[in-house]
Length: 310
Ligand code: ATP
Image (cartoon, rainbow, N blue to C red; front, side, top):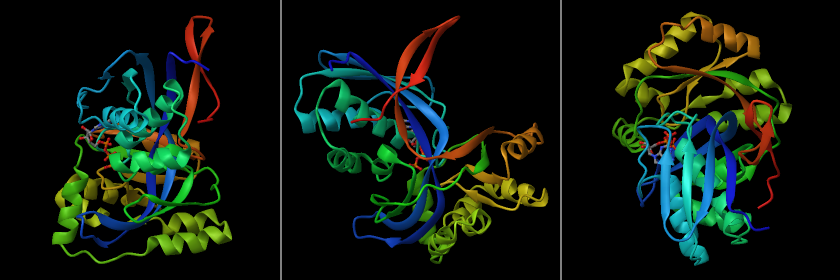
């Protein structure tokens, strides 16, 4: 089919566990992590043009030039496919920026999948993953998502059985952090290796949600909390409130509090009217992306979820 425009709904990721194994020769870190797609999502709208690549974004802090990961994804795909087409990319951001929820990687993955359809490049998922890896370690995961064991720098993916829905409340402080800064501090402070991933995998075999939740954890949490006391404050306030499980998302600064149900998540959110940041309610979802179809509705336009074929 000849498309002029493609819209992709692309989902945030959360590291349910994150073990940092050590620094590699190339400066990256080997990790072991259970990565999971979340309901929180951006919409990426792609319109075919004659030549260049351009980006427009609803979020004032996101750069629109060649440092935007969506722009880089289009550039990499254009080079790999050797096509003359261009694209105008519009990013409708809902995933908080520099929050540890992989928003930039999710947008890049949506561009790869969307352009593969818009430009008719016909690459398979392995080729898209290979291109994605050049843009960022989390991009290959964001192409398919679900529940996955991620190793290497996060690009060696082993799909796991989908887990049942888990509700959570995400507390995003009013600042972002740089992933590189946190890893550098983690090395400087010589933090020890934590092993929450292995424990999670063992509990996963038993299919016991409570013990799986108990095994969740993040090796970078202590480092980010040392550098940004606001992260430590959020965690201690949640603990004092009786929340059983909290952990930081990725390199931070967002803190995740696990909730027993949607109602429990809403109650928790309501108690934080004085929170100096943004609070999101989210739940685990079994995939990272879906193509959207526009449909006319009474009172305006809406979106219908389409298929996910490449
Ligand atoms: P990760 O955990 O993968 O490092 P993150 O969720 O912490 O990612 P992002 O939201 O991806 O962080 O943003 C990290 C940086 O990348 C920000 O400083 C932002 O300016 C830049 N950036 C580039 N492209 C995008 C994009 N499409 N969406 C959001 N941020 C982007």
